[in-house]
Length: 239
Length: 284
Image 1 (cartoon, each protein chain N blue to C red):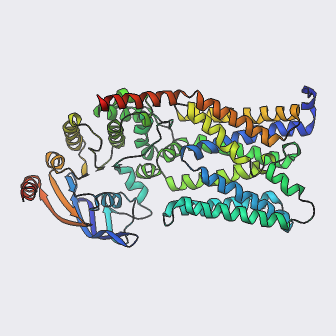
Image 2 (cartoon, each protein chain N blue to C red; image 1 turned 60 degrees about the horizontal axis):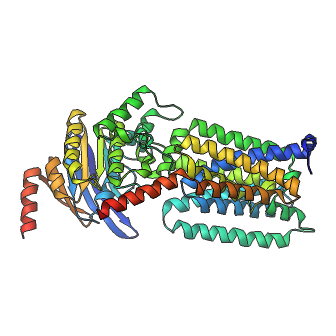
């Protein structure tokens, strides 16, 4: 079964196509990277999968359900999304733990309060990302790299079936970068997730993903297995 | 010199209760407006409510009802404008704001007879608050408190990031529109007591002061409400002592609270320290 099935997606910003006739099938359980330079349409594609953007044409099926007004909320509860960055005022009175706990809100549902299971899920996710010591710090006060790790912890606390990561290495220091790759691989396999990582860092994708789709100017140029991608990419860098 | 006997007068009791309810509802809404950086939306709604109240006076309807209609219409229009992104939201809100202001002056000229009632909507008249108005203010304050209790986690997520809240499966759009409507109601019911020009300060100042101090959202709500009520009651007391307009003094007190909170903000010191530390790291 495909976790994501996009057919002939077209989406434009003010008349300029951001996704031009894009089709993509992501089998359940796969760890797919999407590589492309700035403006290639990678973030737009993730937002379409998550239902944050609606295409003008084409069909979007996520986790076996066609994305529409009725299915949006339910699909989002099973889909965790880590955006590139969230601009927050340093004085915003919301702690890092509060942010991680937000990952649970969709599952908890309206008119209900977080229980021990929710708190445990948030704590475990923070431990995995090595950010538990930041729990009581204001989210706006911590560094960009720490914020990114908190965002990923929030997504993991959600216990999703589909994990969407948009430039997860943003602001992450080199020392933690390779550990982050290992953490993503570990969570992906232990929790039987389907994971899609968008990045302009070919090396990171080649380290972590099983296959990599390459995007340019709103189109998917092709999808390669990890080894093929490494070969193609090194050749293109040489030429 | 006023004494405690004044509190036995019905109008004074009404004024004390009106400042209490306006302090609560405006401060709660203020927390949402300040954290979500929607200050201009609040200004637009307060001026739309003022224009609506003036229309009521011109056509002989209840000004409160027409103010509420205008305020809710503004909330209904501003939400989609902010959402769609077809216009820059600031530009769209600027158009709504200037149109409301222009309409207000036009309607002010059309109000028949003496303009006292119309001008009292501008400056507010807390000592002449009616029982009905008081009940409405109490209802709105209570309603906002109940909504906050019921949907606290959803509101927290939307305040942090609407996009993220949506991505987590929170009905962020419904929560956002609900907050706009609640803002409209809080502003409209406080209009006759605090005044169309001044009500916005009671929304912003206590919440902005709390923002400088609180390290979690619950404390921010509590502090904002405390500052809101304190501004109202101290302003009212000063008004009786100095024989000056109550609405204006409430705003002066709330501004002093804001300035004090900003000067002594522990977050500001921490922020400055972290900037210095970051600078040292970069240079070293």
